[in-house]
Image (cartoon, rainbow, N blue to C red):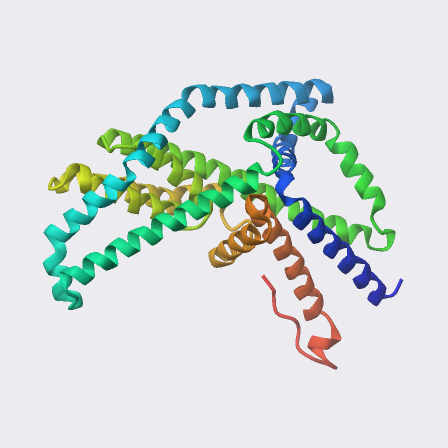
Length: 361
């Protein structure tokens, strides 16, 4: 098979995969979630097999433990988070109004002196800004809801995902062996090496990032709750869960918590600074301890590239796209580095008697 025909085959396969995602993106959430669960838990299942468990019993043991932890989370935390979310949404207009009045009364003259805008225009601009922010949050929530809700309810997600995860986890090794048997024989080792590199990148990043999000969410929630901040548990958990987007989780959490703290604690600057200190300490822990030890540079992708991937895949495929964005970007990065190595080793780059290729890493 010529190089042109090989490129044509893989191009058509990629286009078919993208078309499949675009058509079925609204019903893929439970299946993608089940595949992610199976992928994350496969090493644990392999470990239990080495201890003498059969594949079936290892799968049942892991999934039952996973479901138990998930149910425990929903029983203990979801009612509290649900009540705080309902209260936050109910009081959001009053919070925005109170924050607006507080800023106008205490900082209006300074802002006018700095910007040269009269108080009426400043008040109007602030109101428009808050309205646009509320509309953006509402649109984002609607997009996330519609992306995960179309044709399947949230309840079906929790019913279908464990079933999908069970069958995939039980048959994982057989599926990998079968896919390996379909690989073109002329490039077998090369494809296997690329697959291993992708697996190392994706598994290391995803498992590390999940750990970082859980640790940060717990830290922010406990820290804000200890300060006595209203809705502290909700804001902290939300900031931790959104921490998979670089800088966005902590920034949103800090802005929302400071807004609530100003309304709740003003003019007690000590309590307001304590709320800010929770996020300062959290960012120090994330940047100096959690990220280097749990994730490192396992994706090989710049934070800006990660953010672009999240927004691009989310725009194209909804919430399902956001779930697959980072793994897909990491795999594309592996393929891009491989292509770059091939180019640097080719006559196209070196020419006749050209220099040795540079290290693409």
